[in-house]
Image (tube, rainbow, N blue to C red; front, top):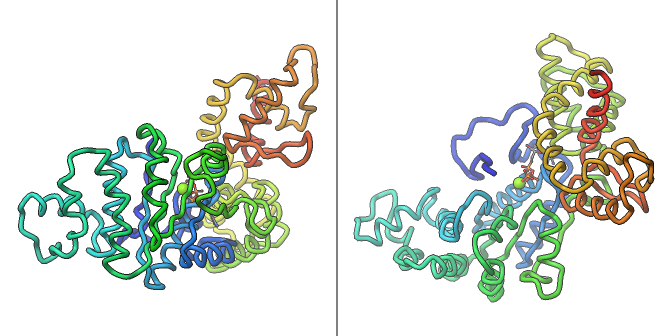
Length: 399
Ligand SMILES: Nc1ncnc2c1ncn2[C@@H]1O[C@H](COP(=O)(O)OP(=O)(O)OP(=O)(O)O)[C@@H](O)[C@H]1O
Ligand SMILES: [Mg+2]
């Protein structure tokens, strides 16, 4: 999967859209994460390692980038490495080296320069010898495995050289597992003894990550403390509805738009407070109001914005749905959840053996699509996806 993501510290990035969507959001648009961010920042600053695992699009990366910004303000060194989209170990290692060197050189792609200097090119005013010194030997390493291991040692070298704590975030960690055999074992072995370096691990395939960190005998067993983002403080997705209320109200107010508390509730009921879906509906609502020249949000405007958002989400939802078609009974069980039907019903045509229902439920949970509310009660992580699934049947009826 190819995903475009703005670089975390890129300079000159355009200002975020109103109600930004689809990638990490700036601090001002990060709703309801203050206490989580403080807790995580303190742990990392103290030398602890953390795990942020959770479903897609709930703000893992946004939260992490804000944590790193704060740590930098405190004077620590930081590096953000996305493990998704690299095709080999060397590529992942180079990302890490670039991110580590940026602390010294102040520029994004220092490793290219390092290689040139290692090959005999002269340093420049912009890239000086001391900017890349740390990685010169590494730049000459031909063997990919040794290169990767050397890259994993670089954060410690940076800490040793500068006397400052270094904090490294590996995002989409599960993707690193596909780059070679025993990648995680190698990582654990290299990272374990690094006293002056704190690690944050992030990822979205919950099942895989949980196993990796909580099962005995797995590479990262008890290496990092999981800080649950999806359930922080007992709120769904860890964000208090009051925080959404004040954010949405103020954000609209900045543009002279008014919304009532009950209209905000309607939005949150429909999205379940899922962060990206909520922002999607707010953005739709904002542009709708602006285009229509309206000042006061009405229930009708909210329902039009919801319909609009469902249309915008149709493509990603259709992909999820097609994906479920590849698994046994996943679509059937998903439909039962969507319609709040009895899960284990042995109704004639749609009969699914109980064991298969259980297997399907586990698979839907492992994909981060479904969550268990109580015994025998399940719901979609994204209520709007549930709505999409319900409408699939209506579409057939209408035909
Ligand atoms: N705390 C938040 N406040 C407001 N919007 C949020 C928040 N968290 C996430 N979002 C919305 O979700 C989108 C995705 O955020 P982000 O990329 O940080 O999530 P993620 O969990 O890392 O996603 P992915 O699973 O794609 O890696 C943002 O662009 C924004 O619209
Ligand atoms: Mg992310």
